Image 1 (tube, rainbow, N blue to C red):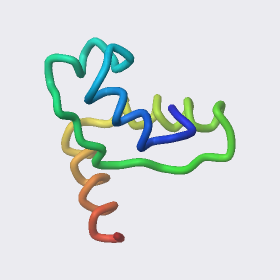
Image 2: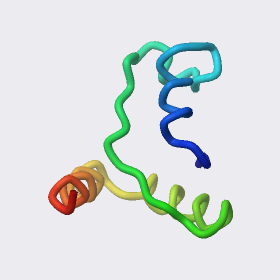
Image 3: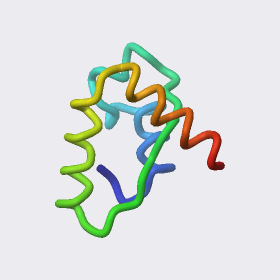
Image 4: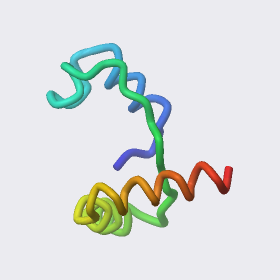
Length: 68
């Protein structure tokens, strides 16, 4: 959850501000994002996405790429 996705991806790829998980997996690439009304809604959506299976997540990404 962030208000500036470009800045957050840059943080993950460059400095110590990125998540510990991504430090060993650089460079990271943002494949999917959604806009939400507020932080609460964004956190709920993030939790829902995390509960999806890998296959469901891949379908979500593919549908997002097809729409772009």
